[in-house]
Image (tube, rainbow, N blue to C red; front, side, top):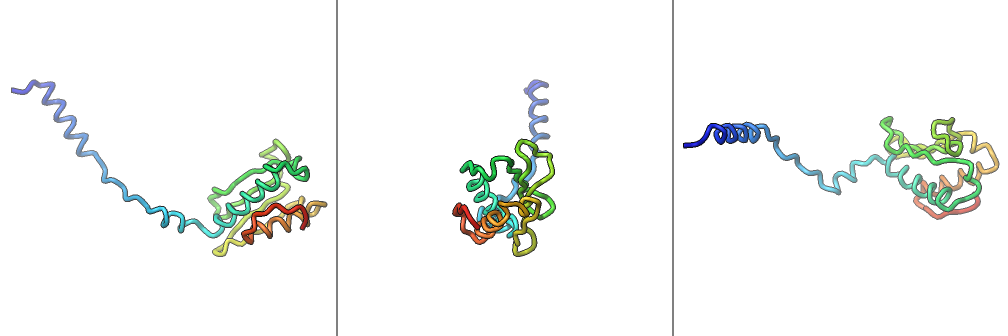
Length: 138
């Protein structure tokens, strides 16, 4: 005959087994990646190139700025910002974002009106076209 503690253990295990949820279906990698919006795909490409060419390369033109990546924006407009160095809560000096079904990349901010503006515009246009090379002039 079974002891009371053994019966209680079996009953508890049976209850726990009844609480199990069905395993979730895994989403194939090709489906998950195809669901990325064009805006996110374009901004990933532009942000990676901009960070590599402007910050990782230690370009002196961008030494006074910090790169604030906001690709996971829930607004549907993934973007990155250039802010004063070390002041991530500061007023953005450059905003680069993508939106719409085609993932059109746009940029705005006071940095575009300065001496580096033509170069920044040229770099962003080049990065958005798929060319990730680091140029030094527009």
